[in-house]
Length: 338
Figure 1: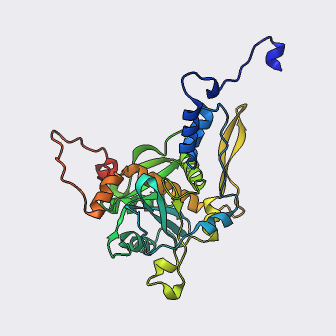
Figure 2 (figure 1 turned 45 degrees about the vertical axis):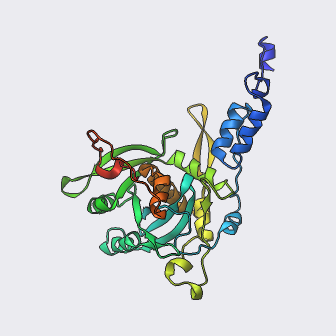
């Protein structure tokens, strides 16, 4: 109406009027994108010319609980690499170990809590027990955790820095979340001082982007690329070890995983979208842990095809590159696994 009063002509034109792309091609793009919210958004925005509204498959945690599936071992088939994340609270450590496969298909392996103040050595020793152990497939082969991200933004920053300094060789790095909107999940690499003035790598994570990625992937309900698998515990009497009957993916976990939603807020006269904790108990550690695990994978940037070839014994000999090798900025922090 405002445009009409101002004698301005307005038009809405989407891809259906384009002479350069056929309707059949457009619909093929849509069919190919179905089930992947990140690709669906591109088609809806750029082809249909409409705003994209993400489907929420997690309004009710019962849906996620029902998605749990039995694994045939500690590690299900398809897992090629393990990452871990640790959230540091005033009276406990919460951790999650996840497995990743081709096209970032993800399997939750174990979610646990270690009670005790993080300024006590016993708490960190218990964490070592979880991160140092080998997790096994049904055939007896196993994997170690390739890299761990540990949140350093709470009241125990110095303890996290010192632990990271002592475990750099085991790929355990301190991270800190950045709520700046629009920055990538790996915002940037920085450095921090541990004891005696020694420096360690500090990874700054774009939590705003990371949370959106997690919510998008939760909406994928067909196993395959970027799908989140969750384990169903075996009965205690049928399990050969504690991992199989107490993996930690219960109702409390899923309530924490879906504890936040993006809501519009007015700032400086304009509408911006912020993540708001809507959980009654404000427990959102499972969401933070999954964000850190996704960032951990992004920092590794693994070649899944090479990892699969190594695990199946079908790798071929490749010539090593010649010439000077570029020195990584923070030792192994920038180096991918190949």
